[in-house]
Structures are given as structure tokens and as C-alpha cells.
Image (cartoon, rainbow, N blue to C red; front, side, top):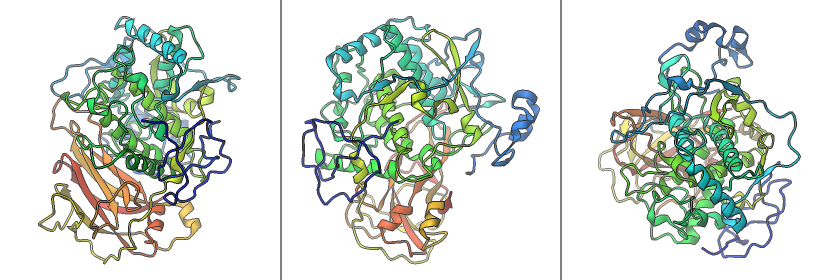
Length: 591
């Protein structure tokens, strides 16, 4: 794919971030229907938990000095906090529970005689490691990266620095090899909750340091896959060379360069009717919806996950899309479980995984620089005090905490500034305002899909085996600007239940009940989608249940629906039709 940049057209409304830096030089023009201006580049420098099997207070008090009574009263109220997830006990690591029934894999690392607590630096280092876009790397950098990976792959499998062990890190934390301290029958799961971003930041940090140490280069930095910019919206060439140590044969053969990535991809959903130009527009609109629209930590990071909680309370916008979709897009559908990228247990086996997540990490930094005083990290002590353990470049087991990872500069690295064209790609309404009637009865969707609803659905819960639409009451209409600043209007798909071995997917539309053409990601009516990355239980019928949240304050403004008492919400199954159960749909104001 040729190098692309966005030119000014009428497609994207004006959106400008104060104080943005100038873009990288030397970018060629292309006629893509979005625009980027000279100052739109990187700026770098209480919800309900899921059900528990135990009463957390009884367990924590029974553990005595583990937390200490002083921590049980916080600004959030007595016993609201003081229950951070603790770093696992490696001596009690076991075979992962959440792997496909046909797979036997061991994810446990070696057990170290002692654990070193990470000590954060007192000051930001004078010189930072700079993570670069993978598609811009020069030959010297590529050669260096290849040598580092060759040496990592050459280490004995039982060396905690080896590529085999590094891949197992993700498997252990994400596929049920670790149990929560104090809750021996509840697994640790870092996805689908507020731990998603900080866990992966720490994982990349140690992976990067090990690679650098293997080539005696403390300045070595991981490249990031710049999939949020048109120039980076394909698999980077450095990972597609079969002779390279960065290559993984277990990738989708249909998605090799120069195929443009689909940031809303669901398994088997390649659409030949969408050309590269339109796909790029869709991708940029998705980035706007997933990064600019969610203005609070809960919506961006995911829902709280504390000691004693069951896994999967609910994922944040960035994890839900495009992160999950990129995993599915990269995995090989010819493999039984879409390995490698397409399944949690195997995704760490692909070197592309680490660059995919480096861009996720970069976007966390960017999100905090966008307008809005609510775009901050969680201040909840349960998030800040959550801990993990990783092996470092000296084969030492190190315990780290989330609070020490909120500033990448203190970790010694930063990202090269890059243009952010998606800041201007706000979705636009496809049609005029939709009039709704006050009714809570589900009706067939009139959306133009191949499979139509023939029998009206009348109540939740329901199996999502056809597109359905329902009228959902709003908690308040005509909110003032201050009210909108204080609380986000949130659409919640309650109790989304499915088998964890499946990659399920459905799209969510607002005020689209009488549509006659396909809604696209660049339309305001598209609230987003839900796509799951399989984790899979040994018992293939084991199910997970989670909530899915969408920020809709701005969406309703764009649809001219602020004065409406109700909106019509449409769910359209896209994959594994009839295998997702929905408990209900509601709208709340959440601050």
C-alpha cells in the first residue's frame, strides 16, 4: 500500500486538540475523505462489580495483616476499596483452565527463591527509549531487532527470558493458570476489566528490556504497529518476511501486506465490496468513536475488578474495539482455534502481538491528552495497588504495581510523535432524526440483513439469533452542558453470555429501526460492536457473562435525539449467530 495522508474534504468535521505538535515531515498526499491538519499529532510527554463467591470483607478480615485495617476506609467509603488483585503465587501455578479442550499447554514460569519489589525512579530519565512506528524502521534497526529476537528464541525454554517463556506470560495471566490470593477457586484474568491496559504495559516493559539486554543495547525500544494511521494500516513488512525471526506462520494468509486492516473485523467477515479508501475511512471513524468519545476511565479502561470478583466484569472501549478485532484479524482461521493471535493462550507466540499492544499502550497515553478533565487514570487504590510479577533481564522475579506504570517516562520510554488523523473523523448521521414511540416491546429490525426476524420478541433475556430492536427509555433528556460534563450517558448491554471458546460478535446501532441500507462505522447511528477473543475452557460449554458499555452522549447530540424520552437500540448478530444470550438493555448516567 502506498504511503498515505489525509487531505481536507467535507467528510470530517473540524476537531482540534489544543497544543498539538506538528506532524512528521515527508508524508505524501492521497485522496482519502478525511482530513488532517498541521497540528494534529501525538501529544506525548463507581461501578458495580460482578458476582463473587465469597464476601470480600470476611476474607480480607480473615487474612489479617495482609491488607491491614487502616486500608479499609478510603475516599470511596468503608470497605469500598482495600481489595486490590495481588500478584499470584507462582508456586501454586497450575495448568490453565481457560484453554480449548483439544489443547494441552503449560503456562507456568519457573519459581524463584525470592521476589524483588520494583522501585520506581525518583526522576524522569534524561534520555528516554523512543518507540518508533514499525513501518518506518530503517535497516539498522530491523537488523538489530532481528538479532535480539533470534537470541531470545535461542535461549533454553526454561529460561524465563526465552521467547517460549515470554509467550507463556500472557497465557498464565489470561487463561486461568493463576488463582487469586485468598480466593483459590477464582482465576486471575487481566482482560475484560480495568487491568487490561496496565498489565500489558508492564508485560511489554520487561519484554523490551530483555530484548535490549540480549544485544547489549539499553536504548533498544519496541516498535509499535501504527494501525491507527493510514500508513500503518496493514501488517508491518518486518513481520511478514518468512526468513525473519519476527515471522510467525500462524497468521491469516489472506491478511498479508498490503491488505488494509479492518479495525471492526469479525472472524470470516472479509468484505470484497469495501475498497482500501473506504476501509481506511471506517478505521479512522472507529478510532474516533473508541478513543475520543469515551471521556471517563471506566468507559476507556474497563470496569473495576477487585479481589474476590469473578473475572470479566466488562471491558473498556479500546479493548473491545479495535484491540479484540485486531487479534481476530491476525489469527489463522485455518487453525483449530484461530491461533496464534486469535486466541489468548497462543497470542504471545506471535512477535506481532507485542507491537500490536505497543500501539494500544501509546493510545492510552494519547487519550489522557485529549480535551476533558475526566480523561485521567483511575484514582481508586484497588487499581493503583494491584500487583503482578514478571521476570526481568537479569532473570530476577520482580513484583510491580499498577501505580508505577501510569507514566511511561518514569519507565524510561516514550513514543515518536505521529499524526492523529482520526481526531477529525467524527462519524456523521446517515439520515434525519428518527421518531420513536414509548414502548418496551421488542420489534423486528427493519435493517437490510440477509436474515429477518419473523416473530416479534417480547422480553429479555433472549438469544440473539436474529437482529432485534427495542425502545429504551433515557434517564433524562435535555441535559445541560454541565450535566453532560458531570455524567456520561451510557448504553449498557446487560448480561452478555456466551461460551468462552467462541469468538462472538454483534453490532449495536441507535435510532436505526427503519433503515434501508447498511450502517457503517462512519455513521453516527453505529454505537460500536462487541467481538470476543476466545479464551476457552477445558469444558467447552463453560460460559462467561459480562456487560458491554457504550458512551452515547455525543452520539445522541449528532442524531438530534437529546429531546427524546427514548431511543431505539438495535443489535445485529455478526458471528456465532444464536449463541449469545442478552439479559437486557438499559441507559444510565454514570460519572
